[in-house]
Amino acid sequence: MRQSLAILGAVGAVTLGVSLTPGAAMAQSTLESVKERGHLNCQVGLPTPGFYALDADGTWSGLDVDVCRAVSAAIWGDPDKVEYQSVTSAVRFTSLANGESDMLARTTTWTAVRDTQLGLDFTFVNFYDGQGFLVPVDSGITSALELDGATICVLTGTTTELNLADYFRANGMEMTPVTNENVNVLVETYLGGGCDAYTNDKSGLAARRSAFPDPTAHVILPQTVSKEPLGPVVRQGDDAWANIVRWVGYGMLEAEEFGVTQANVEEMAANPPGPGVARLLGVEGNIGEGMGLPADFMVSVLKAVGNYGEAYERHVGENTPIGIPRAGTLNALWTQGGIMYPPPFR
Image (cartoon, rainbow, N blue to C red; front, side, top):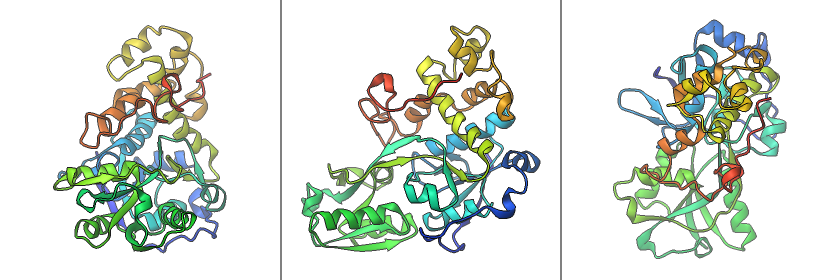
């Protein structure tokens, strides 16, 4: 994989009431621009285990990174034509809107304001989450309702900050937020005793805790205080590009539903067991060609990153240090009690 293009943090923050427009960045289609450049500019967050982790050799990996790799594979048949842009939460939407990034693949919540007022298009949900609280075990706190009067570490410029205020107001409690736009600073503040609790999406809490010196010394409280549908984002105004990102994601889910894996995808393409698999893998129909992609783009995607379930288990599943169960949760396939329900390739 290509190394991170930059740690971007100097761009002005975006306020929720200001609409962003892509302007000159949309003079040609995003797909044309990406092909001309020869690589995808894919925005991730500051390194976070499981979702966008950065190894010592500069290699990125994670559930959201696999979305970037999958889109690259769909376009070129090569998952590594990606420049990763590591961007703080406060400036992520600016960097996307002004054309620095072609897409955003990080734990970003789909909300009404973001979808309608910032010039953004959310494409699909690749992780259903909810906000929670992390506290030291030795604090004796067992419920978020025991945090009245606490100091809470929270990322500024996020829905997390707004949800925190809503939760305490709804429950008639007081708290003092400790804010920063850099998650690493917040985590160090929490570990150093600078706040009583750290709040974030529960997946983020599990990811951060997995890298603590002693993960067992910290507990995620049982309350889930928000809805956090997380997924990739593109600029408004280029529906064709949004379709590519969207259907790459849906294709990974459909592949899991059909039992198409990284190991068997070539065999399945050579001998499709049914018409649904044949359409998914480009043996029948013109779905890929209709998006400006090779007919067998999903074969390339699945060879590169596998289906959704494989990516989930590889990066955040129960057998990883993060250990987020999938069975019985919203992130399970609809056939297994969850709400991961891809529209059909037809």
